[in-house]
Length: 118
Length: 118
Image (cartoon, rainbow over all chains, first blue to last red; front, side):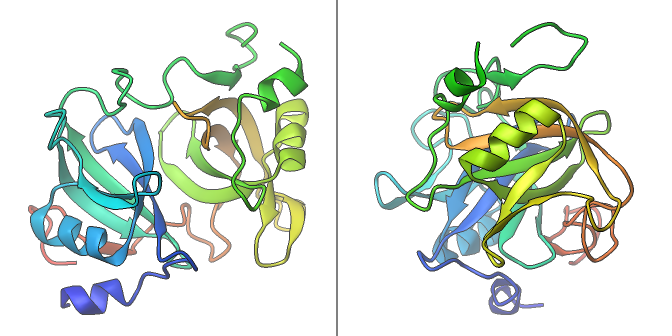
């Protein structure tokens, strides 16, 4: 299937973006959630480097270009209605710009009942 | 920390919603992505049942109330900038309304290089 045919399976929102859940392919940690426009998805599919759209900066960015923390893309799937992507990667170093491995580390709102209060 | 204080850590978007990545707590499969308004998050935190906001129906819904496929919530975390949630659950049955275990099953856009073409 061509890249254009694959892109046609994705439903970008009114803002032209789709949410991408980024997961470490082997440990299955959820590393981060980012956004892709069509161009960022096309680059991700063709280059196998995690590439996103920054809503705050309004520009495309390729993860790791400044930090060195690149994402080698192993697999990309879409969800049942095509408006969310799952991007399985091999993450070099920290996924989060704060330096933690994932963006969700130590930011618990509700703890498991056997691990005490949040 | 009170539920109000926890909710204050979350940055809801202009539409009043935040994206929630739902993950099976033990296998770490990403099951689905859904949306929460403040009320849905409050219900999720207090009842430990996965509760969301339907953008298409414009109403709150509690996963499993019609399908039986309930989500028992184990842990909820927010990401570094508070605009995404990670909801770890114990999913009963299929997470996807199409009947597949996850919403991403068999919907591959880019396959791993060692598993052949998508």
